[in-house]
Image 1 (cartoon, one colour):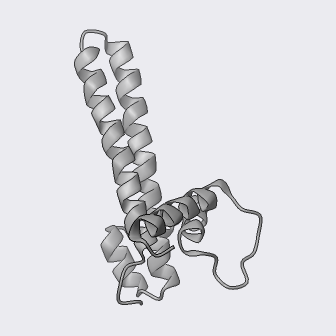
Image 2 (cartoon, one colour; image 1 turned 90 degrees about the horizontal axis):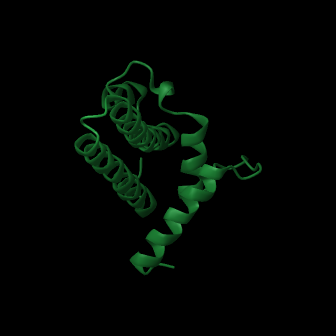
Image 3 (cartoon, one colour; image 1 turned 30 degrees about the vertical axis):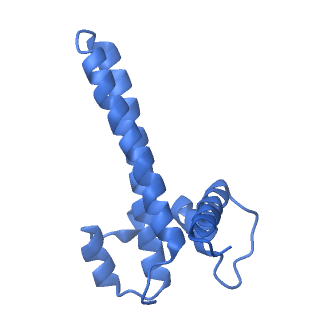
Length: 133
């Protein structure tokens, strides 16, 4: 395993954290605004919280995929994820996202999925702000 974290992974965590925080903030705002209207409260709060969950799940899966691809012991990955089943996090979307962030594994050329593009854009922005373009 490399000694330093790739800047694209750091940027990915920051990017998804921004989205998670935004959705939690919207959930709290909806909670305050619609506390007298249970149906609207339920609908809006859960929409925002599931949006936050999706970003969190993708970020966790992307990091877990990175660890797996770079030879981290499977028991360590399970311990870090606090789950006996890392594959519940390492989804096709997470693998595609990781490919966009750090590039494809050798011999894995295929049409570009959406999350690969998103990951590559995060990595590009991280490089641009790091000055290592």
